[in-house]
Image (cartoon, one colour):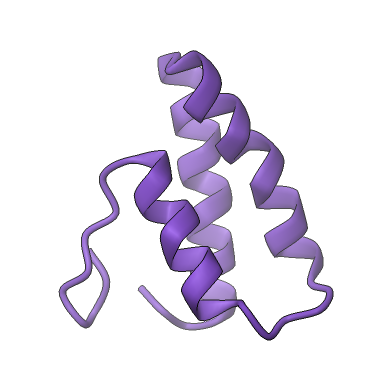
Length: 67
């Protein structure tokens, strides 16, 4: 849960948050790196893929000091 109470439960929740928060970002390595595991997790639903995507998302949010 983010400080503002936002809950990220599904890969779609993360994608929506990224689209909203980072809409004006033209290039950012951590964000670009997080997209691939997020898409993989959304496709397979495998626990390992979800864990990898979660880690990547957390790195992005910490980079922006959002969690």
